Image 1 (cartoon, rainbow, N blue to C red):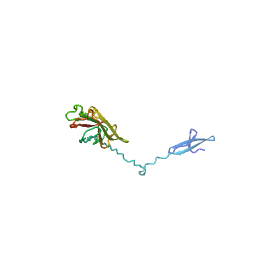
Image 2: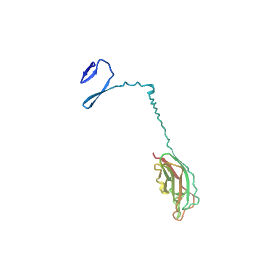
Image 3: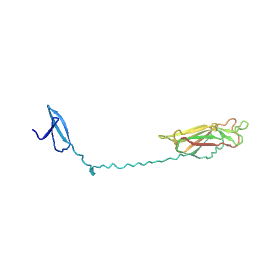
Length: 204
């Protein structure tokens, strides 16, 4: 039967009318050829209700700094009274350092020295050596650590250093001085003195 159609490639197509584009799907079934035709849908216009507001993005750059500081405070005098071996004296000192640091400890005379005759006279000594312990609490990223240095007074005339490692200061430090027994027949009568100098240096 003819319906005013043109035969193209073995298929009947309707001619003479404008039609929406179609998609043809060819399926084989029991030796017969079936043509399924699906009309293409036109794009749906975007309405105001379908618009999604993704918002605006704002970036703010923030900067800051911590000023490096390293300070040590104290400097009080210690009177040991009548000198002899085994005397113990202690003193605290302030410490504020927000970076790792070294404390350099130096002795001016290498011990408690006689004011006018540090070499002594006859069998009597003019020098009383001592041991010094320096204790400093430090704060590390994950723990608190007390660092400690022990020094002999003659050695501190050269180079004596206590390092905080990778820690920063955490509170007051302490000095503990303990005198050793004098040599010879004892100490020469007179006045004795010593000067300890502690210098803190940031280590960055």
